[in-house]
Length: 152
Figure 1: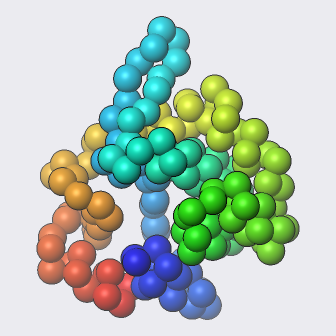
Figure 2: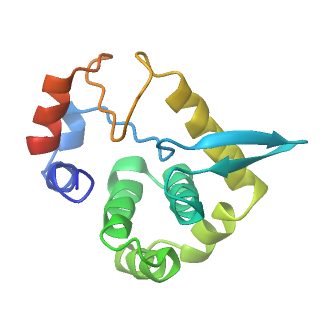
């Protein structure tokens, strides 16, 4: 709800990003396992969640965060039943290259990017215990999180 609710509203507010430094780590409650020189991921809600995480992570790495990647991710999150169909649709609407995003999400490069998201998530202090885990000015509090989710 947060992604397509208050975050979408904030993202569509003119100049919002001039006053907000926003980071998104598409990793959630996933776990990573090293397999030789690569990694595999196990997501709380199964392989499809991991697929979505990789797509979102690649969008964040390939495109400008505020003007392209976040609008794509918000669009993508409106229909997570078919990441490919929704990804193609959102890419077309935003003039992004779906093939580049999809290729990244199924590549070693995409896996490496997702490891970066894992590391960033694992470094949160205090450690996250659920998602979304909202941190404002370097601190997490339930009161602030509730306010951000209600009306970012």
